[in-house]
Length: 502
Image (cartoon, rainbow, N blue to C red):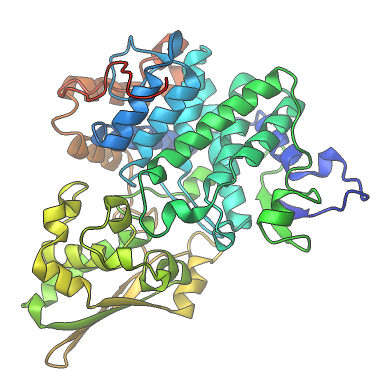
């Protein structure tokens, strides 16, 4: 690995493009190093994972509305939409928009946490859509996806966005653009221009994840994918970009991040080095913010020691800075304690999540979030007894650069009315690669089977699994059928309509 030093350069101090971060990312995208077998296996896992969570959310309002918008942009040789018949195709950028919303809606696909947050699986919808539209094969897709994962993970390791209230899609735009550069075999110059345009257009605020969280949380990654596709298209036509987008005197670093004195160190694979960042990422077993995954598993364990939940006096969650301030009481969001809050808010409230997991001993992507479930009087009472505090040791573990030591858990202290204390801690979710039950291909396939029950037939599911198992040898024609069809239900907004402008 190399560590690229990123800082701001005054306009009078010329920075050669070969020393700019965007150029380094473009060089990475145009380095045709062969893929490792374990990386290919994990890419297949994440393609299955994306499809499962997308189909499980297929008739939820944000997903259905994104689909209805996409259907107003048909294209005979375009890309497919999750759940729709295979002969229905739309323009790739709109497929990226709709499929990206479907993947993100349930907050249940893969994650990587470091200096910032990310869901690297958000790279898949945009890159797959363009691969289908441009006639690429399975191996072409894999080479592009490994670049998307690599760049997003490397940026997230080095550059913190959230402390400046910038949403994490600012790292997704350039990773999708670079992955598309690999997919299409573009020159380093063209990828460089594409990456800069994608960075420029994908900087948005974190209000999408603050207060009353709305459906935009689901739309944001699809929006970034769509913007990246459009950026690449413009660059392919010879258009240039704001430059240098990271290092310039009026750049995103200078005015949206750490400022003119900033210095970051971005780890990047050296030329000819394998791109393996995907193996540092992890998926979700439970449909909730990643930092709650280990705590849901811990709740399942601790509940066995509690005979009467009404006798709980209080619960304190000792955890990392990120968990405390993003999904804990440190966020200062009263909505996180409101039983009438949106699902998008509840899945970012560790107080709600821990209370329900403790009471129910299970977690379900639908049942755990219903209005009836959230408004149960005994749940609300327990929920409001829960608080979080930052613990320096958990913050240190959260940021540990060693993937084997990095942890996203907490210590839980439950105080009973009689003075008894029940204490437990868990560093990693069971499904984490270093957890008690690491997810492998059978787990991904089982997750798909469970959450798409009643949506996808057994035959259709097995056909999809077989395609993923053989993804290295899929032809361009095969790849056009990689998005599985929801053949057991009727999709809402499955026809072009006139509700909007399009």
